[in-house]
Image (cartoon, rainbow, N blue to C red; front, side, top):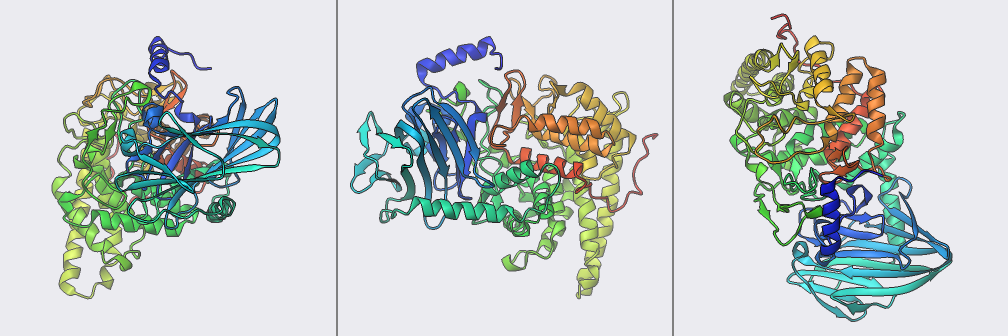
Length: 633
């Protein structure tokens, strides 16, 4: 068991008095219908669910507060039951087994692929003996703030404003203390079911459905989907689970992929580094597209790319870092001050002000993504080619400006090395993508214009690389650094080899890997940067950012340190919880996951590392390496 620090012991003592949720993040499993998702704990409690979409207000928000903020728990009346759980086959259906001296039951939780309504289905199977069970349901709309009006007819209805949640079950229920309670006994061979459905209070009550048929449909959906995975390497099981997780984070109507299903899970317990991640980040686009295409999921890759084209369409100077699942631009950040936060970690933020930051690296991500499948835009009336030309031409005018960087610091803008590298990527990917289509351009004036753009981009690309090699590399440290003129190391510089800015064999890449291993590794895992040395506008520290450690795995493999790469990769896989999920960061002091959960970029970086080790991925070669500045200069 992890050792608790005095601060953590005090927090736990206060939680017993206040009722704060202190369930470790890694004790949650994910269920979802590809439009929203819920988190269910090992103890059988759904403590987080936003309805009807990922970014809607939560109806269960106990994860960020107390039971008064909404939860749904089904468990044995005997609190000492032994617990085991797993995902059934290759699905997003969670099976939790409770065992006592008197019997054994299995709780099966899932969300069927959505038709008209979104549902959460919970089935209880009697496996052996008998067991007394209890269900507690507290529906709270508006992130736990609004107690609904509850009525019971053939079903239980909870209504507040336009929101309505309906409970269908044959088990007798009763009201008690602003909750709905059921106490029942499950015998061997018997089954009980509960189904919660979201709908509009302006419409008719959603009809019930056969929960067993819904389970069959759900199983067929997930097992049929993952069969398309083309990966056959030694990490097949964890690769499948990561891909299923990415699919669960995908908003099916638009193809957008949220960074996580939660908001404000702290990067440090009790700290203020708490952000809303229920949105779509552009910087995830290129890596996500690469992962999906390589695994054989072309349909999902095309949907994600269509979302991208819609989201960034418009004036190039208005491109944002992140967008809503629908591609919306307005994501105002505010605080839900009635929620005490996970382990009393305030504030609880809704929305994300980083959407208004200038972050240069997104141009590289978008340009790389647009270059991968230029034929995919015909059905949405947005020309990927024209959009790429407009964005990269705008980049010519702005890449010399400072920005907030990949980590979205809330301090002053800087000339971040990684940001400039991604500007180089934008030029490098656009040049061959547009040059290769010049012969297809029938308008001579347009063809001449595009040819001139390509030549301009080549000059800008060379200028970026020269500047980065001269200003972003510290000879004394023998490493690329966080920002021009800085002595601070930053794990984002590991991406230099991953994006093809320099080959992995370049001594500056090897030097950067070694410097980061020496100075940014804590307890075997890579930190983003030293929070004590970086002006990021925030107090306190954070855990180790898991994607950075996976980037290190890939870099170690590319520079030929295969044993070290596999050793670190296996250590990282051991951080996943019992159902294979990873959060944003890992707190090696408390031996706990931290940050929002499950985190898309953690699983994306995992997939890249697995592919590199299995020999299924290597960095994209630069369009032209002739302008590389030798390290001797």
